[in-house]
Amino acid sequence: MLYTIIPIEDVLEGLDESPPPTVDVAVHGVLLQVEPLTHFSGRVQRLISSDPQAYLNPQYQPGTILHWT
Image 1: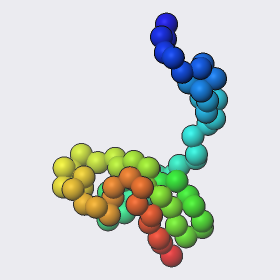
Image 2: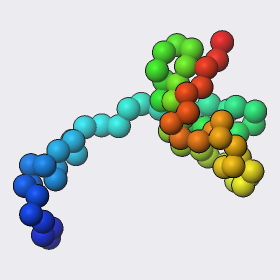
Image 3: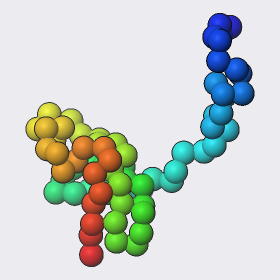
Image 4: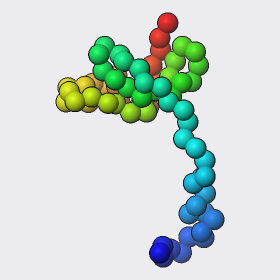
């Protein structure tokens, strides 16, 4: 049960859309889930690592654009 003053159409908007496809990429030994933007770049969606230092690296934070050749 959901009690809200917002119309149900607004609450459920976008619920049926599927998330963008992602690929797993290893960068310097760190596994990242990346949303491909072009053939040579992608946006970091998620960091998958057990190393706490990897989470402190701004290069791996979600939303960062990665470029490769």
